[in-house]
Length: 209
Image (cartoon, rainbow, N blue to C red):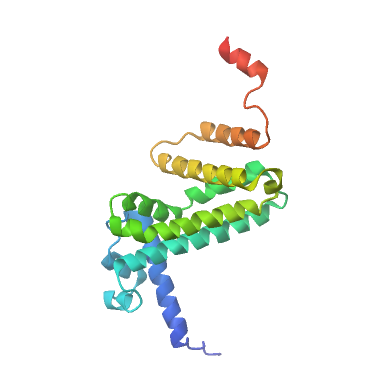
């Protein structure tokens, strides 16, 4: 029977840090920012508080590491979803974005955005990460096939506008779900991006009758 190789000290350290970050993301999404204490994080990660503070200087350091992990994972997951599509399709991409905003890990990001409104320390630390996140979203949008069809600044505004709209939709959906209107919203977005009218003349005349 072959013995399992013992992990190096560096591997054990990386594993502990990953467990702490994962526990923080999970806690933020499940119990919220205020209740994501170092004790709660340590309990979920299976480490002592002393073990937690051997790797992070403060609770806020752990929180920011979790936020950065959410940012990175969202891009990995979105790229995988985009690759699975095969052929580029605007409606499918918008639905992928919606799925990303509704992903369980994204709840951690929303928790931090809401908490940052009244927590100056969190706001100051989160702002640079949010700036990076949105720069990467813009860069990602410019790499899409649709980018060739419009000026970069217009594309940037459209991409960030869609993401912000879907973020708002995801937050509202926690208390009010309206699938029919959500599907119509995707259809309208696709028409706008294609330069088509939102409603044909017959539909408009019917609505006005």
